[in-house]
Image 1 (cartoon, rainbow, N blue to C red):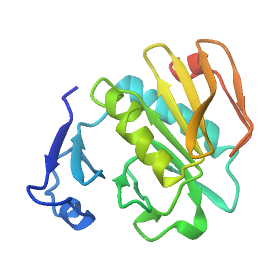
Image 2 (cartoon, one colour; image 1 turned 45 degrees about the horizontal axis):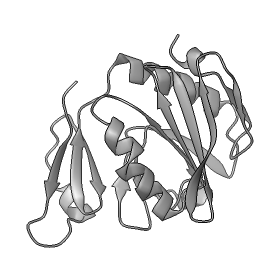
Image 3 (cartoon, one colour; image 1 turned 90 degrees about the vertical axis):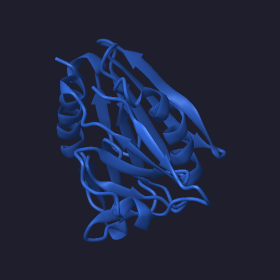
Length: 183
């Protein structure tokens, strides 16, 4: 899998219009902290986790929420335009092309090319935008780390690996066994 590429403005911050003007090239284009970040398509372990977790969440998400799988833009109030692997948002925050507002849950699945960003800049971006629940799944272990927004910062509420189950109390009632996501 290739590495991530970043484009920065020579003066000021890039905007969504700048990001939307980037020609299609098979990469995901996100706007993060005023820079356009491009990453390659994910590999098999990532897609396996994404599909299995999507099916689990899809079975329990109810109105007024809706579940989305990448590629799907999430436009945060901070101006960042991110493409989380999975997100749950309010139906009232949907437009014809994206989720505009704060999702109630964002899930990022680690890949070699995204690991540092998912655990660093994206975690910060979701926290600063007020995303109440942020999960990170590492297919290589397998492991799930769940963060909840508490007093403006993320607190780890679960860190489970292998066959250890974890039941999320919010925003949906679902039990996740990390090893089941990679089998």
